[in-house]
Length: 426
Figure 1 (tube, one colour):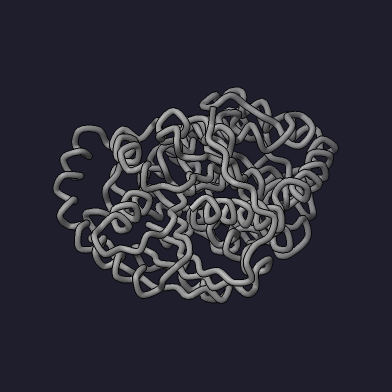
Figure 2 (cartoon, helix red, strand yellow; figure 1 turned 60 degrees about the vertical axis):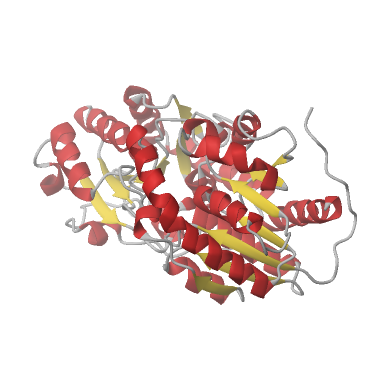
């Protein structure tokens, strides 16, 4: 039986919270953190928020624009590059311990200066290093909350570390029931784990608004038809980082199947390799080579496929598509692009694994395909291509579902309640 936190009805008029982030680029966890900060800033204008990031990047400026005090406390490159690659990773972990100690001591000093009421960590590395900083002699005894964006059970290196440091964690927030269940098998039973699903900015992710010129970004010639003036040409895109498990190969094989069967469409890979972690992501050259092997050497010249690179305006990119594809090959902790595509009123085809299954009702709000099944993905794309009414119905239902499930106000309310409970239990 999971421990229960004390219920508190009202929040104090003022609190000071420090957020820790191991990354500062444009990935899903950073987008979630910005939505979280925006939601709390609106709901609790009297509170004071600080962000300490382990690297520099757009996250900090975006946080400052929300009125958050943001600063960089740079982790050594060897630590930032540390990933999950088995025994080799464990060896690098031992070499990185010494490099981490200085950062942990600096973090302890910053927390003593900032004097937060609570520390909210947004990534695995800061979960561990934040726990160590708060355990050092002279550290303030501040509750630490872990925001779980990943399956701990798949992290051979980090899972035992977080299990050992779990006694320093006051509570954990999981982004899906699937992630929460996995965490309960790893973390000590004393750690309360709550599901708080991600939110998105429903005022930005809307069906109507600007659309990016994906062809120009990808360096492709203008198509003879477009989704806005000719239903004959469809624009179908995978929006994801270049992590190995995001399903780029599945997407390319599905695209090849569709094109071979006469579907008039243009496919786009939208995103890039944004993280410092080694051994975890494709390069663009890798994917271009893969595309040449799957679609043919002339696929890019023919305009069948385009690489746009990373885009800052995700809503405009999604609105430029007729079909948004999510193709992760392993269980997805959440699947932020699914929620974003639904909010933009686009027909979404999602890989039915992990937390992604909790976001939509299949056939009513989006279509689903088995993870890694390129033939099933191609069949779903073809079905949507042949039935414009189905695309429209899914888009409308998806927007309605997004408004009900992914609002920032819901996120702020749930997090504020957990903060109250953590501090009351303290």
